[in-house]
Length: 121
Image 1: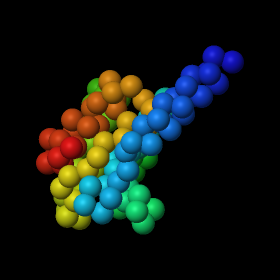
Image 2: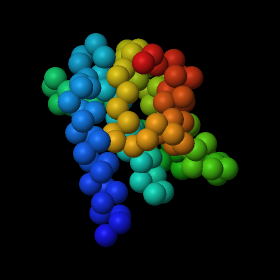
Image 3: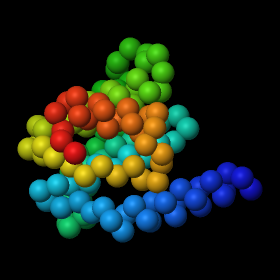
């Protein structure tokens, strides 16, 4: 019962956030999803409804790395990875979408990694 309430609360927060945040061609949306084990990041153009760049802890490039000391370090790597990929595609600035999660821990680590790679938001 408790888990269901927590997910419902996150989804309500997500809807409140998405009313205000939208990605365009010039400033696409960097959306972060966090599960218990993995972290996913996508850069989305909401005008066309397409994902431009994506990175997650399921990829070969991530799994080929040495073992990370924590999930926060892994999230920071994913942020750097998505930042590098987006700059290679010509995307320099994004709008950050925390997807209803608290801006803390792994969600914050993804954004800091993306900033270190050169993304502006």
